[in-house]
Amino acid sequence: MPSVEKVARTDAGLAAELRIAVMRLRRRLASERQPGNDLSMNAMAVLGLLHRKGEQTVGQLAAFERVQPPSMTRTVTCLQDGGYVERRPHPTDGRQVVVVLTDLGRDTVIADRRRRDEWLTRRLAALSTEERDLLRRAAPLLDRLAQED
Image (cartoon, rainbow, N blue to C red):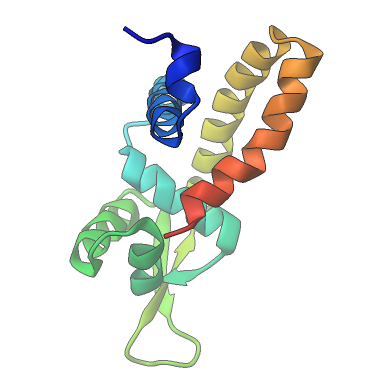
């Protein structure tokens, strides 16, 4: 079996290593969620998007999360039923509504992020200065990979 260093020398090998590492980190961060938070990762992603970008239509949320609008409608309905979001009339298009975070939704996102950031901060502290600098440079690249089609 080839060594990890040899596999990573090819783009396909690097892709495989990144996929595995990112998925493991995602699962680990998911396990560090705020206790008592029973929302799905998809629901939390919607709350996070609303926290970052402000009010959005269901169509905008669906496009950003790359799901079909009926699926997003179900997610938004669950979030609304739980008091995490509200639907309000669209300011310029009477046929649409916008989805807005409630105080509960905002507090949930902030508490969840704080807990996971604290865990990751502790893990980063165990790395060397050079390793943390490398991750600082890699973070924007990983974000760009996630954004591109």
